[in-house]
Length: 407
Image (cartoon, one colour):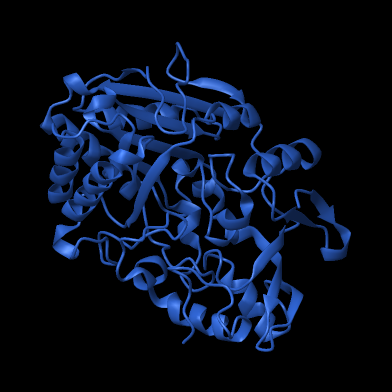
């Protein structure tokens, strides 16, 4: 189930079978058709769950979420009599029941309605960029005071609060601010720019650095993003090569993830809590971090109800991460990330509840610690997803700890 092809039986839509990885998709769409989809930067991810959870990546500010380009799906469903059947549903399906099944797969998460075997993307998916500018800079933890740290997070949040409009000229820019535990030695800012005027990238770097200190080359890989070797402020390369440069395979590890959407820059209290966790002297793990991804622009051009992804007003998206290898240390690492998260959101019952500052969590970063996960993942769309569940999985054949529940 790893074929990728243009399907003449579906109006020339691009078919992606459920067993593909993102790297399969990127390389084949690029090599054969010169097009792409705005999906994730970790290219070993399987499309099966990435897409139906919404999907986003370094081209999403320019082109929206992955599901914004979804055209049709093929799903094995099971009816009330335990009979399995293959169902193909389109975004504009004349059958209302099938159209609802399609909608449920535009951000409703995996494992809820059936087994996804194929996706089709619009015949007019975006042209792939020819080239990309990559930039990677760092600040040594040893030279970053608490005040400078607050300035850095303030600059980053303010920039994307000012430049996340639908037609903003900075929509060609995507950025990842990696804030690892102090034991990792450096804070790293990685950016990709696919526009024509590279001065915008230079202005961005200057804005983020203001009051923090001049950045230096990054020396250490952060998460799945390797060190980008460069002697100039940025590096120009073919886009497909840039995609590969931004990712590398690491060792298999244990890990825990949490997430949050941000509708506004970090409040001062949150910045203090982030500093406290990342400089905790009683915890030493260079693979523990908060990753702040740029968001907004074309993502927010879509209404919250058009797809199952309800978060359509955010300017940043957060990944709380910790990785380790020794199972005897599970409690140590889990305790740290749980304390970190609940401290940051202490004024909203320990979770990023939908409000003017935060906007819930990302379903593809599954988090069993969440109590009110239906609201945090799906907001007002949850009741409609439950209705899809009743139509297409009336006996709850497909279920897990955070699956959509029957109404």
